[in-house]
Structure formats: C-alpha cells, structure tokens
Length: 306
Image (cartoon, rainbow, N blue to C red):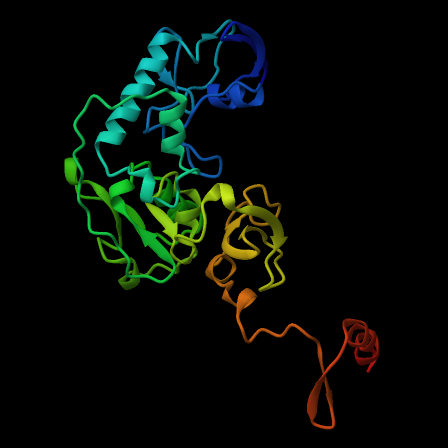
C-alpha cells in the first residue's frame, strides 16, 4: 500500500498508508488510551477517549487512517488532554462508579483512565441511572449502573459469537444495553459464553462465581489449555490462595483469541470439588482399588494395545 513519512509527538516515523493513527502509535510504542476499541472487534470510534490533534482538528486515532506524506500528529498536547478529561468526567458523572465495592477494581479501564489523566473530583454532578442489578443468572452478574455504553459487549455478541442477543435499547438519557428486547439475562436466549464479560472494560459485567473471590492483584494468572474438548482453547486460570477463582480466555491464544464456550469459562467447579478423584483407581474383580500414578500410567499402553 506504500510507506509514508509522518511525525507523531515529534518523532519521525514511517507508516503504511491506510493504517490508522492508533495502529501506528501502538506499533511504535506510543501510548494512546482507548475505551470502546478492542482489537478483536469492529472499530466504531464512539467513546472519543483516543482523540489526537492534527490536520488540524481533534480526531479519533482508532478511525483516522494515515493517508498523506508529512502528516503531523500530537497525542499528548494540552488540547488533547483536556478533551480526554472532559470525556472521562462525563462518563463518571453518568453512573455509579464506586471502586470500593467493585470486583473490577484494579482491572477497570475507566479507573485506569481517570488515574492516567490525573482526574480530580469531576466538575459535573453525578446523575446515577439507578438501574436494577441483574442477578438472575448464576454465571454472569450485570450492573448497568457501571456501564459506559462503549458497545463492546454488543459487538462481541453479534460479531464474534454471532448470537445476536445483546443490543442498544431506548434513547437519550435512558439508553442502555439490553438483552432480547430488555429481558433479564436468565430469561433471554443468551447461551452464556461470557464473551461480553471478557471484553467489558468496567465492572458492568462480571463472572458471578468470581465475585469477592479475590482482588485482581492477589491473583496469580496461569495459562493452560481447556480440558473439555479437543479444540485446545487457551485459558488463563486466576488463582488466589491456591484456588481457581476465575477463568478467562487468553487474548493472544492461537486457537481461540480470548473466546470460550460456557463450559470453558464457567465450568471449573470440579477442580476443587470434594468428590473429585485425586488418586488413580484400577478395576480388579469388579471393584476399584487405589493405585500409584506409575502403576496406572504403566497399564495404559497394555490397555491401548488390546
């Protein structure tokens, strides 16, 4: 497509024509914050958090392609930072973003943005929407009071999993994310794959069983392979005090790219179940006896040959 010489924050760079400013920035280690953007989803440019200055107006880095030689862009100018702070202030004013009681504290992108931009007390009064918390489902906990309407869950459901359950509903101040025309999760046609939870940037969607299981900074993340079928999806086990409290899809997993089915994401109770077998058993004379791993594995070839 051709290479173009551009300048970003005073750095002279070479960019592939047609690539977005955000792509060029990330390729060259230049940080530009985002909220509605996710690499696995269609780009919509709706949150305005990634605005940069150039050409000569403010523009969203995720949707603006590099199209001409000599393009000059600023990602941290005074004008850019003021615009980003305004966006975050409005988001904070439109919901209940109390980090003290939120399990996403420490892994919330809105929280990260507020800290990165050195936010003080928002200038605007907080107008909480007071949505009813949807606790109807044993797998997904939904608190729309923490939703920033980024649309990630909508695109994940419709574009990645193609279940077409989640969408935007209503208008204006009462606009919100709905499932099947505003049904509770448990009453909808949702298959509970959890793709929406995986991409949610705030605490609006969380794994039900993981709530109060441990703060993100307490968890050791161990990458493994899902044991349910032969596809080989990569999973991240979130382990607190030796116990798996949550499973998420590995975002750079070769097979699944972060996606999981309902079993792979939520079906991990067996790991710590009291009835789980911890010692190999060998059937002899119609009953089982305990055996060592060496003895059990030593019999596998013989059984296979038969």
